[in-house]
Amino acid sequence: MPFLETNDCKFYYKQKGSGPDVVLLHAFTSNTAVWLFTNTFGRLAKRYRVTAYDLRGHGSSQITPSGYRSDEMMADYLAIADALEIGPAVMVGHSYGGVISTQTAVEHPDRVKGVIFSDTYFPGLNHIEPDMGQSEPWSDLREQMAKIDIEIGENVDFPRLFRAVQSMGIKQKAILAKNMGPVSANWISTLGGLADTSAGADAFEVAGLTSDRIAGITCPMLALYDEFSPFHATREFLEENVAEIESAIVPGAKHLAPLQSTDAFLELLENGLEKMLGE
Image (cartoon, rainbow, N blue to C red; front, side, top):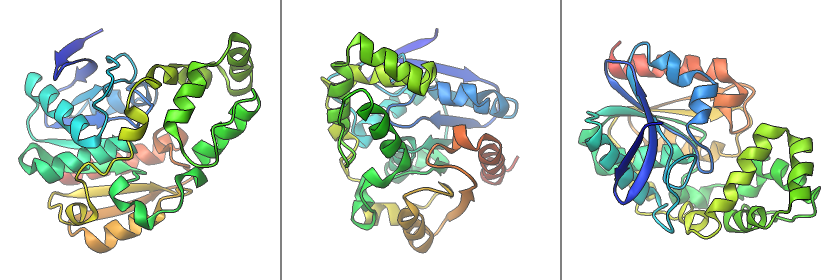
């Protein structure tokens, strides 16, 4: 497995292909597997040089006590890009990966050719959004955790979730695996590693990416929002306030478009890359 040590952290990464640089950034609590299992990585690598890595504290990358705000994650990306000699790239981000990508485009426009993000919630736009607890992934998880006598709350509370996972017993893990399947249960079991970090709180920090700075972005952007996303107010804000943005709806998806509507997501993604990179 290829690892890279930079910015006081050890990162797992994958890089393949040749041509213009495309960088894939996964969601908070996810990892690069989302790009591999859906063949997003392999499919794009036929036309571009594609780089994907596990964010700090995620997947096979090192868990650190802090460093999970979007501006700090941006610093991680810049260090990785320097080490791997990644030029100005189109940054593709799912959910929190879109926040990191947008922050990089705002603060370092010379490093970004374009941004494509999928169902991204921006802490800097929290005043226009309903409670994130209305999102289906959280409500589904809350229901599954209740079956093993663990309450994670109506509102999205990642620190509470991480502590709950950390305290799960063997019997609870077995029931969770039976109810959700081994893949989902394994994903949940990894979250306990973040319990003693600042990650759960950091992900909701504005970190300088205010609504004004988002509205002032100048690079080409493609905003993909899921048909059943809870974040359509964000999509409408972006359409009305960002000059160089296009948007599209991913049919049938509920925040997890790369997994739930893979073919539709990939078609929109590839079309967006062709426009931005002139391929």
